[in-house]
Image 1 (cartoon, rainbow, N blue to C red):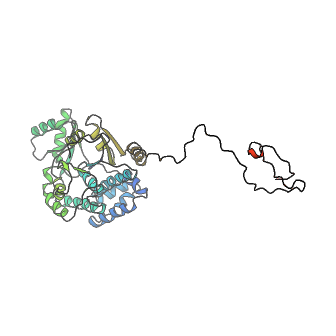
Image 2: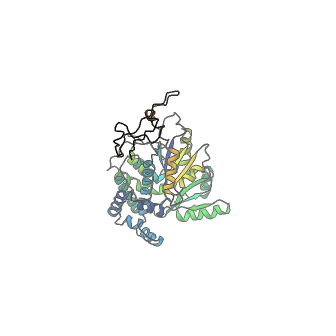
Image 3: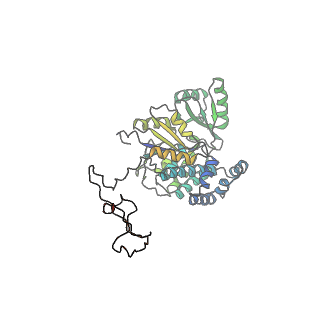
Length: 390
C-alpha cells in the first residue's frame, strides 16, 4: 500500500467470517426477489458438492427446520455466510456506495475477492464448497476456537504457563480480545483455569481450529484445488490479512488462501496500519456486528464503524442511511431560464384569440367584441358593446 495517506473520506467494506451466519438476514435477502439468480447459483453449487439444498435452509419456516438442515449438512452455513456478505456489498453498491478498500476478516476474505471481481460469484461458491469438503475430509475435527478477554502479550503468557503446544494464538482482534485455537478439551480446561483468575473464555461457533497448525494437513489439497482456477485483476483494492499486503497480479493467491488456514491473523495490527493510511470509515457487509464491534473497540481515533444488517430486518433501512451519508449529492443542473432584468419595461399584453362563438350584430358590423377586462389589452381599454354573446 502506498505511503501517501488516504483522505478522511476513504471507505472500507469489511466482511465477517466464522460465527456470522444469520438465517433471518439470509431470508431477507432471498425474499427481496432481487437476487434470485445468485441463490440459484448457490443451490447448484451445494447440490453438486454436498448433495444438499441451500434453498431448503433458506426457506425453512421454523428454527427447528433450519437446525435440521444444518445438522444434515453443517457446511451450508459457510456458503450462507459467503453469499450473505457478497449480496450485502452488492446492495450497498447498487445504492451508489463505492468502497475504496475491501477487507475480509478470516473467511470473509473470500467474499471480498468475489466483490472485487478476482473471481465471479459462481467460482467463489465452488471454492467455498470445496474448501469445506477438504476440511471435512482432512481437518482435525476435535479442534475449536475460543475468545479470551485479554490482549496478545497477556495471552502469550497464559499459554506459556498452560504448556499445551496445540493450543495457539490464532487471531488478535484488539487490545482486549485474543482468539485461541486448540483441541476442544484443552480449551475447556484452560477456561476453568482462567475463570479462577477472573478472565473470561468463550467457545466460538467454529467447527475447526482455524489459523493454527492443527489445519496443516488441509493446506496442500486446498492449494492444488485452487490452482485449477484463473484469478483476475481486482477492480477494487483487496487487503489480504494473513499476507499483510494488497492483492495484486503477482500474488500467488492459491497459496495465500490455502495457508490462511494455519497462519495467525493479527487484525488489530491491520486496523492500526489502515488507520495510519487515513482510513476512517468501516462498513460491515455481513450479518451481525462482529467486525464492527472489533473495529469500534480498537480505540483508534476518528474511526466510524457501521453495520448493515444488525439488528436483523434493518438491512434496507441501514443501506439507505449509509448511502445518504456516503454518496455526495448530485450537483443541480444550471437553470435554462433567462435571468430577469431589473428596470425592464413590461411587455404589453394582448388579447388571446377568440375561440368562443359570438353573435354578429348588423347594427355594428365593424366592431369587435369587447375584452372581458379593461386591463387585458391597451388597445381595448374601453369596453365596446356590440350586442354579441360569448
